[in-house]
Length: 319
Image (cartoon, rainbow, N blue to C red; front, side):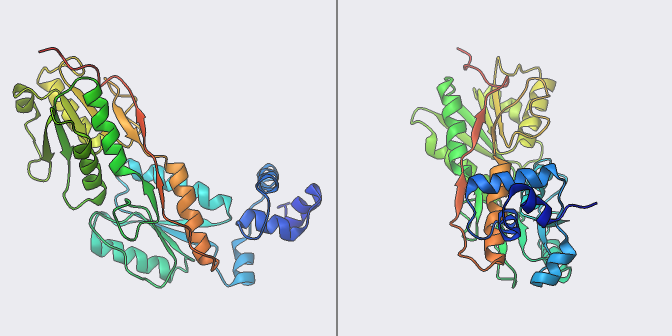
């Protein structure tokens, strides 16, 4: 038999209202008691009735999640984190993919509204700006985006990456990005530029200009460090080097961003900057539910990125 709120309340010796507030994130419940209640709910396999909530509150108990490109390994990881964060506060999640297209993104938002979503978390397609759609919205993009609700500190991630390679003695570094329309990639590149020492030569390579960039020719010019704004682009560089007989990391060092699932498994394993997707997701859902509940919106949050050192970087070669 499916456990109810009153079963959890009876077991812990608290009121049903306290259990409801702890699970929904509403009301004044101490962090210690909230954790006890949520742990008990998990142990009893409690699942809130979305239909019951809808009847009580006039809400669906469902939030939307619009992703820019589900084929990119980063975004399924975000979806898992958002779904877990939403489940903890009693919400289900509808997921849509905008396929990197502004029209599809708008269609997805409209579809979420028609399906009765109480609010929407959106990771917008590159270069788009959110407008008022008549529903609570939490935007996960980058701090330089005016509408941003929560995100990784992409610019500081760029600084960390540049300092890492320079600390290993690299003085000619290529910065590899995909699109000038991407706020995230621009922030990462800007952070790298800011952290470059006066004696470091760097060059920005935009893949939108050339889908088959000449990484090998850069090595012949003396470049020994390569920082890509995504692990996917770092993998492109690694592949070119391996096919061209360039040893990584003995001759060149390569870094990426986002710590995608394959990054630890390839050879050499990839040094990268990781986003804390769980913390970002938790904050995004909290920001959204605050708006849904009519509470004061949460302050915008920037979550630090973490350097994951692996085998693709080492001290620059002497010659």
